[in-house]
Amino acid sequence: MKKTRIGIIGTGGISHCHMMGYKELEAEGRVELVACCDIDGKKLDAFAEKYGFAKKYTNAAEMMKNEQLDCVSVCVWNSAHKDCTVTALRGGANVLCEKPMALNAKEAQEMADEAKKAGKLLQLGFVRRFGEDADAVKKLVDDGTFGDIYYAKATYLRQNGCPGGWFGDKEFSGGGPLIDLGVHVIDLTRYLAGNPKPVTAFGVTYDNLGMHRAESEQGWVVEQGEHPYTVEDLCAAMIRFDNGLTLSIEASFNLNIEGDVGDVQLFGTKAGTSVNQMRVLTTKDGKFITFTPEGEHSFRFGPAFVSEIRGFVDAAEGKRECLAPAEDGVWLMKIIDAVYESARTGVSVEIK
Ligand SMILES: NC(=O)c1ccc[n+]([C@@H]2O[C@H](COP(=O)([O-])OP(=O)(O)OC[C@H]3O[C@@H](n4cnc5c(N)ncnc54)[C@H](O)[C@@H]3O)[C@@H](O)[C@H]2O)c1
Image (cartoon, rainbow, N blue to C red):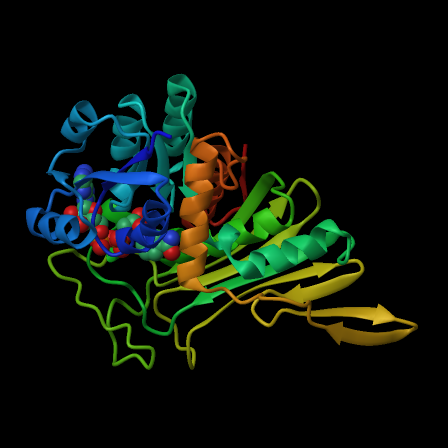
């Protein structure tokens, strides 16, 4: 059987998580690690050696021209997502692009259109959809445990946790904690609630605290390097969906809060839950009760990435449906655009 030919564009931090998955598939004889690419030659050399890629490139278009790649992971900074994804799609590959899909919805739509035109799969790096916590809650949602979910709260708050470098530079990142962290929990909420269509957003952003104030208890002390810090510290927003769901979301790089917190809470007509605690609150025989579903239900970074990569290669080979399709990435970018626009104008923004 022909092995699926793998390429990687961007060999920084997150690409190593993708490699956990590809290495497992390589060991099973399903994929061949063909080529990797980065504009930073030093990083590229170390990456190629570590994972055994025979071919390496500093230019993605050249890689796509020379190698017949079936599946490509795009792991570059946000401002390069669109160009690298379009290059890989035009070069004949299926693409897994990291989150956020792009700098804005316009770019995201162009990427989705390009995938359609090329007849290739474009999957988004919404890794939280692949967590065991998401699986456990999705099962409960699907069997009607919660009834109608009409309210949700999603938080991803760091006390002092800008990842540094380009993450704090709007030209490269598109924004701060909303587009970097909020995107994970907004998408997870939307996924768990059955992917409803967003209709309006009201949001606020603040940049009162700056990049680095003190030693963080969580150890998020990263230098900004040559990049200016030009993103928000905090974003809070209310997003309304067409099925009646309202989501309240808070995300921060910097906030005077005692420690880092993150969760998605769902509130339905029959029951509610916190995805982090995985305790379901409901009623039975006129009394409030709580229960915890059986099985594994914590979010574990490694296994979630392995499952994401496996899901991507399976979907590219037509063995199963893609769990995080391009259209969901486009909706997410529309939400993010609307929240930033609302924060700028002070009024609620319609999402179409
Ligand atoms: N899913 C998650 O949980 C998660 C976690 C962290 C980062 N991410 C996302 O992954 C992406 C990369 O983040 P990171 O932390 O790995 O960043 P990073 O800075 O460590 O790595 C990015 C790499 O991309 C390279 N690059 C930039 N433009 C390029 C181009 N045109 N061609 C080839 N290489 C190019 C850079 O040289 C760098 O090595 C971002 O979009 C980020 O939001 C996702």
